[in-house]
Every structure is written in structure tokens, then in C-alpha cells.
Image (cartoon, rainbow, N blue to C red; front, side, top):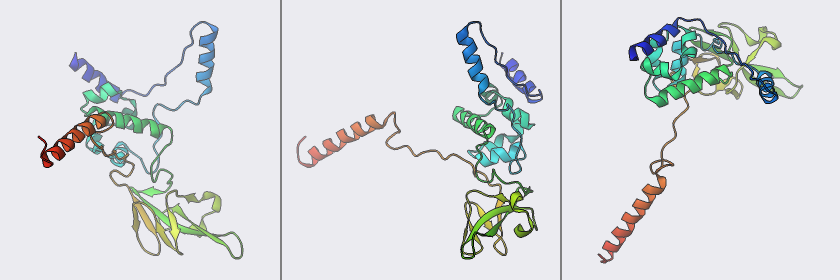
Length: 236
């Protein structure tokens, strides 16, 4: 039985993606639910890649938590977004919370909820070039922001409607760009490179055993502290 599940998971790796369909049951209530479901925008089962995330390995590298080690489990982009939790388990993606984390990030990617660099348009070999751009709002007021341009391009030579403004970065002073993972280069130019864990959702730090054990841990600690105080005062 296990070998059958493994073969079915591996078979899906090369199977073209399919879209799900919604069927309605008889009755007015079922028809109302069918209309409501179909009024919602449908997300693609397999979303398109973006310039900053062109392949499986880059995606797993960005979301972190050691998922990069499983890159060879997914020969195609379609396989990454098509496998179920059970099939991921059969392929060796462990522990369960790692699978849940991967599935959550797959859904976020489908919804267009990217991390830093997700809005970039010009990326070569995993590196994007960021430059400051200055716009005169009036004779006395000027506004500076960060744009993504092709290597060697001058922001002033690109039409304003074609400029790619980058979120999460700002211009400090006249030409200094500041922001997460910014790699300073020459003449105020900054490079943004794919880095492991760049999109990672950091785990919270458990306090007193976490929410489920907090009351028990604190109760036992209080008992031990009161006992130690009585012994210190000479009451046994």
C-alpha cells in the first residue's frame, strides 16, 4: 500500500496541472451557494513564476526553514504547487509543521502575497539593481524613491510610467539607499540578491512552555518558590 502511495505521488510530478470544478446540488440553497462560490475570483492551481522567483530552488531558498534541501524532490514548478500534504510526506518532507509551512507559502504565492523583492521586474542571475530616483514636485520640494532598473540603465532615461518602484526601501540623504538585505555597490547603487530565509516567517519564542502548558509551568514554579521560601525561613 505504501509503495502504491509513493508511485502515485511520483506520478503526479509529471502530470499536467488540472483545475477544479464546482458542481451544484439540486435545490435553491445549493444553487445560491454555487453562485456565491463562482462570484469569487478563482486562484490558479499553479501560479506563474516572477522575475525574483524563477524556479523551485529559489522559492524554497527564500521561504527558509531548511526547505532548500528538498529542491530535488520537485523536478518542475507544477509539481511544487500540485502535491498534497500526504504526497509531500511520502516524498520525505518532514516534520508535519514543515509541510504545513510549505503549503501556507504556496497559497500566499498564489494570492500574490510576496516577500521582499516580489515586486521586482529586472533580475539577472538572482540579483536586482536598485537606484535612487528624484522627482521635482515643485520648485522647492523634491521627492526621492528607489526604483529597479536593468543593469547599466539610468533611471532618468526610463519613462516615468515604466519605472518599477520598490517597496521596503528608501533613499536616505541624497543617494544612499537603505533597506533589508541591501548590498551597497558604487555611486549609490544597491544590489538585492536572493538570500536563504529572506521571506521566512520567523517562529515565535515559547514562554513558559507555550500557551498550552503556561498555566501548569507557572503553577509548579510557584509551588517550588513557596516551598523554598518556607525552608529558608525555617518552616519545614
